[in-house]
Each structure stands twice: as structure tokens, then as C-alpha cells.
Image (tube, rainbow, N blue to C red; front, top):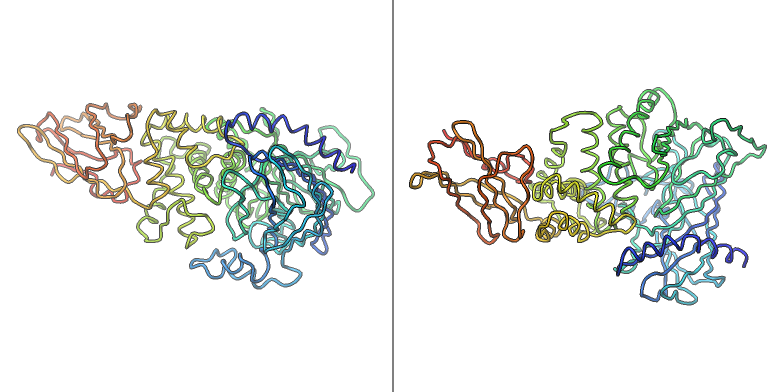
Length: 616
């Protein structure tokens, strides 16, 4: 009973945040959660015992009779859903393939809840793969908070995908998805998705975590270390003497407020480099120093703070006081306040992965959209932002086209016959190819096309507005569209419907240029099924240029003229029902040198060969 009383008091401490969150959302609500967890790690058996106490607040209007927990490590067993899917999909992920089916008893992962009580009463539960289905002894009423007490045990799998032990670079533990995690419940109901291989969605809350492990291990990850002067390993305050213990193990105590997940990594050979930024943010780099890492990870210390400053300036101030870049995992994977990345890379690759994973701190870590339903709102926006950041911090093409790779990837997808709508649930794409290009490349082009439609400056301001209005609120596709509509004053739901919910493509052409009674008549055709506004550039024989703008009628307005573009001389609305339109220039054809659609190359036109007319 003492435990429950203490935890209820702790819950009240965070209630101020909860109430502010609810009031800020109006009719939108979110659940909130607080985890208090401790584990004791056996590094010889790669197993651990854990205790978990959860304060769960139901802010929904619904009465809950069941709850669901993710048991992610159960995916790393032969014949699991992840195993089956990884072996049978048409284009398997090379990191997984048939590796899960070949794991031995001491290599598999498992997570088992040994007992659970709600408010002191035993629950009824059934383990179904990676989901624990829990029937409650009494319902959770709206506007109430309950306490779950849980005991669990787990075995860390051999590192296959994201989490695990002994990865290819020798890192002992990459501890992601390591605890029973309550599934999120929102306006669409429960999101108890089995772990097939895609990404994650969680409830915002606080994590108080204690990890007991052999004392020669160095840890890092999510959260602020609460007992740094007892732990040492580079975390201690300047000038402090670490109080060494004679015990064989240390207990690391972390606290992470307002996050939706918690990751940690550990290795006895980690080097820990710490950078204190002028704005109060501390950057931690943890890696195994050797000939493959020493030089590039040392240089990484220059780039991580620069990337942090870039993202904070352009997408909203980073809200935490620490960030950890840790060697581990199987590539690059983002978590709140931290990332796991493989470390045997060239400097460009190392910085590129760090920048991409850090950018996730905005779109996955804090905005926190449902990545199963809207992976493009995280991966795509992260790709867009990280492309811009890489160009800025490496000073490459400062005024160039950093999204070029995303355009190439999307065009390849659109012509491949494999494309599926971006609205497809992440786990249910038919191929990894279609998922990757849709989530990353076409998702990035959502923002690039918005820059074309409403103007780069307005789009960039809209992204700052998006951060201010939706951080910690888990926005959906309509929410980002409405933010951009309000910033631009234009109606943009048509773009969202075409780009997200269909695979219709953009393809415009100049199909005719001719003399007409002393004037120049230009005929444009929409060959593709997706309508878009058109920027048309006319270059005259005397060298001067003029811009002709054709907004869609259904935009209910037009974008402002953009700096660096030719002066706009004519605006003509184009109804989407009309496949062709004609423009009359008040000048003879003899004075026209060339005409081009979209001189900025931002329009995601899948066939540019007919976008330009040049006088022979």
C-alpha cells in the first residue's frame, strides 16, 4: 500500500503538465503515463528481472475494460510474426532475412510478465506474441488514474533488428524496446500493433528508471542521470570525486520527463565524450574507440552541436537538456533524447546518420505522430529537414537543391509499378521498397511540394508554427495540412487527398506554342491525374524573363511572389477539371526564345522532357 500511496503522490506532481496538455488541445485528448522501473541485469546469461509500477491516467471520454502491453522482444523467436514476414516479403531486409529463424535458445529474445495487479487487484492476462492482452478487475473510468504493478523477466536477443546484444561491431547491449510498454489509446482506439518490423507509437509521460549492472559497464541513452557523482564514467560534475563502490554492480538512475519511450545502451569499453553547449544542452557521444572509430567520432563532436543548433533554429527549440549519440544497433534508430547508430563509417556517413536520427527528435520524439499510420510525417519530414541540415553544416550547395535525392527516389517509385498510397499502414505495405520510398522520399516531397505551392518562406514559417501548436500532441495528416493552410491563407486539402491517399502522379507538358494574331499562344496540358499550380517562365530574345502563374481554382488564392524568381506578369486560374489551358502573351512569337514549366525544378513532375519549349 505504501508503494501505491507514494506513486499517486508522484502522479499528482505531473498533473500540472497533464492539465496544461488537455486545456491546450481543446476537444483533443491524450492519455498520460508515468513509469517507475528497475531491472537487475545478468550480463553472463543476458537476462534480467524487472519491476514496473505505472500510473496511467485516462483522459478519454471512454471507459476502458482492457489494456494492452507491447512485449517487443518476443518478436525475436523462430516463427514469430516478424520472422515470418521477414522471410516471405518479396524484398527482405538484409539485416533480418532468415536470421530470426536460426536463433538458438540462448540467442532468442523473450519478455514475460510474471504478475500484474491494478490498484492492488490481480488482472487476467494472455500473452499473444508481442502483445499482452489484459482484462481488468474493474474498468478504468474517464478522468481517473490507476496504478499497475508488474513483475517481468526478459532475455536480450542476439542483435538482429534495432535492439539486442553483441551487434556486428561488438557493442554488448543496444537496449531498445526492453520493457513491457503500454499501447497507446487515442481517438481511434487502441493501437496494439504486433511488432512486425516497422516503427513505434507511444503515450507521453515520465520515466524513472534504475538499471543495476556490472560496475565496469558504461551506459547512456534517454534521460538525465540522477546519481552521476556515484557513477562516474564521465558523467560526474566537474571537480567532483566519484565515490567508488566496493560492490560488483552499480545502479544507474535515470529520469526522463515528457517522453514516449526509453532506450539505453551499455558496454564496458565505451568511451564517453561530453560536450556542453552554450544553450545548456549537453551532448554525449559513447563509442568503442579503435582504429575504425577514433578519428571520425572525434570529429563528430564538431557536427552534432551544429546540427542541434540548425534544427532548433528552423524547426523549434529542442526542449530537453541532453542528447546522446551512441554506437550500437544495426544502422541508425531514433529514440527520445538519444539515438543508436553503427559506428564503423566514413565521416560523411557518420554525420549523415547522426543528423537524420537527431532530426527525428523533432518529428518522432516530440511531435510524436503515429508512425504506423503516418510514417511519412516522421520519416519524410525528418528526411527533408536532415537534407537541409547536411547542406548547411557541410556548406555544400548552400543555395542548391538538397532534396534532389528524394525527387529521384520518388520518381523511380512512381514509375516502378510498386507504389502504394502513403496512407497504407506501415506494416501492410506489400514491399519494403514501396514503404521506404513512400515514407522517406515521397514524405519529404510533401514539404517540398508545399514550398512550391505556397512559397518556401511561408512553408518554413508554417513548420515553426507546427512545432509551437503540436509539440507533445501527436498530430495527424489533417493537423499539419491545417497549419500550412492557416499560414498561407490557401485551401490545401486537395493536395493532401491526392498526395497521401492516392498514387496519382504529376505530369504537365507544353503541347503547343504558336503565333495567333500577332500574339503568342501557349497550350499547356495536364497529362497526369494529379493537378498542381504551375509556374511558367518565358525568356525573351532580348534576355529579359517574365513569370506566368497558374494557380488552381480550388486553392482559393495564390502564393506571394518569391525572392530570386522572375517578376510575375500574368496570373490565370486553372480549374482542375480542364486538362488543357491556353495562355496568350501580348507579344509576337518572334520575340520569344524559350518557355519552361517550373524553372525551380521543385514540381514533382515525373516526366520533365516535355516541360520546356525552345525556339529552333
